Image 1 (cartoon, rainbow, N blue to C red):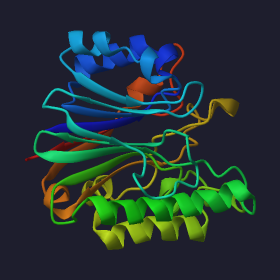
Image 2 (image 1 turned 180 degrees about the vertical axis):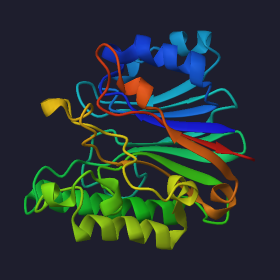
Image 3 (image 1 turned 90 degrees about the vertical axis):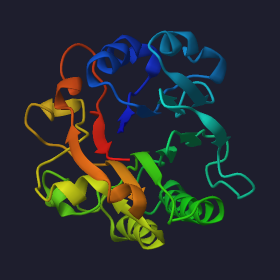
Image 4 (image 1 turned 30 degrees about the horizontal axis):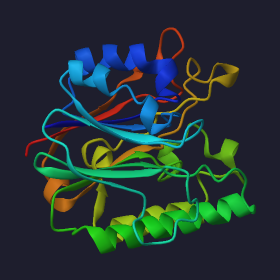
Length: 258
């Protein structure tokens, strides 16, 4: 079973590229982030023509998450349920059962600058994510939580740690929030398979960062042990970051032997 996650940075702007990518990558499940559209604008018929059921949670101009599946799509849930959301209304969490596993597409808040209320709310949001997982799921069942986490798990995941000194995405508190998710029962499946540095999923549009290989690995595929132990292959599709009008993120793919 092939699962992928991709921050497309506007599904309206990137729809032809997503269609093309589905045609050659053939994921069974695709978690999307930053769709930047309302639910009634989601191109459901386009994806159905390609063999995918789709679920979308969006608020219009910003954020937005989706799940596409060709192995079934049931029990769709949005947001944190009865728990308070520090970024209420931002459309950042979508869950569904897709064949043999539960899939969650997440778009973690950026946090803007360390020391601001946006950064504090980002940390609170990540804590709420852990609480929600504890309330809704079991670490003993196959579960994948995939998306743009806006946190680089460790220094291997940024092109130059010194370049990010004092900035978000690399702070001790943000990384501790990821560690709390791991203690709950999630495993970074990409790191199970590849231990190297220099493997990135995001490159800023500015300064020629992609061509200079100045990137970050912030698009993550976390899985509970029953799914993580079944991970057999993973890759970051850099080709999808090339060409005309790409997203600033590349898809991350993990194959599970489920």
